[in-house]
Image 1 (tube, rainbow, N blue to C red):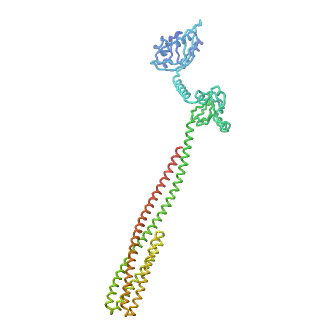
Image 2 (cartoon, rainbow, N blue to C red; image 1 turned 135 degrees about the vertical axis):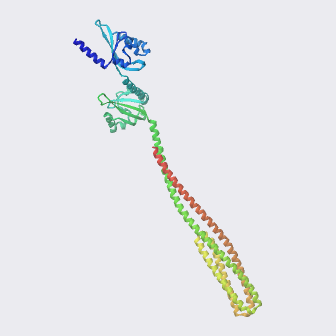
Image 3 (spheres, rainbow, N blue to C red; image 1 turned 45 degrees about the vertical axis):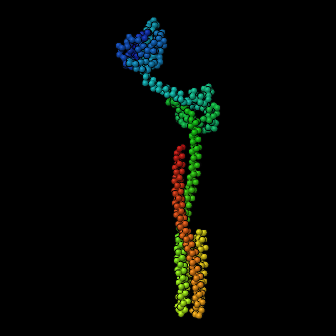
Length: 490
């Protein structure tokens, strides 16, 4: 009785923990506990007396493998594994189960007891992990190391990429993939020390394949922990990054070249901007100088107009003197008065000559101020000065004649003749001077107009240079912007 009590307690514990179902040796269902019925979604009367095949798909139920499954159990062999089954309504579940034959007193299989645990969620999670690992193995290079860096396993992608067979790698050290200088460095020793402590590493790594070609990998070294929570091995996942790194290096080289060129352009632009600023300053000075010369030319033109007017007055006076000389021939008695009148005329002519000489002096000064452009003015001014001298000389002659008339009235007629000749000569000289002054006045007006045009042109040049200066500043700013943009490309 005590024995049955212990058996009952054990069975109660099993029924509480596991899904339990019993079959005869052919697979007919004899009994199912509540855990099993709940997991499969059935009521007891829906399963008792039915065959086990209600829990499997039709293809498997009709297969030789399924028939062998029950033959094995009927022969008294125990089966334990993970099994794919179907609950009521066709819902797929996964169970971890053991099928255990129970023997009668004759040693024959009397029944089969199945103990099961629903592992559907765990199985799906594991399947997800397995699918991820399979996907990684299909697309990535995978290699495993012990904590010291010795190779444990490598997938086919890694073998193909590096050019090795698996036999050439197993048991060898990771350093066979590294460049000699790095493999012998302290950095490399520290690298494996950190991995051994459980520190992961990810990034670009510089390696070499079996042929000795340098390659770049985008890799992650992942410490895998054992059941005790301590690092047990290192799994490396990698993909080829050689082309990417080469293109990046090429891009960085091009970028640096662009930056260097922009520096050169910026230097030239800054130099151009400085030169443009100097040109603006110079053109402003030139504009002021041309404006001053133009103003001087206008003043000189006005002076020539005044000289022309004075010479014209001289011509009129000379004509009047001729008329007076003719009248004097008829009225000898009024010779003294006429002589006095002639003396006044002589004083006026002398004044005009002085004014002409002064104007010539002013013209010479203005021509000197004008520099090269005033050489023509200087020539004209000297000519006017010469004419003024001749006029003064003529006036001296007239004065002598007047003195002779006053002291020798008996020679009045002869003196009048001399006066007439002298006045005629004055008229001729005045006419010549008037013509020359008129021509020079026209030239001076042309020069003045030209200087005004030059002044406007210089102003336009100054404005253009300012625009150029503004443009070079804009280009300089653009170059700075390009330089910043090129730097951000990195």
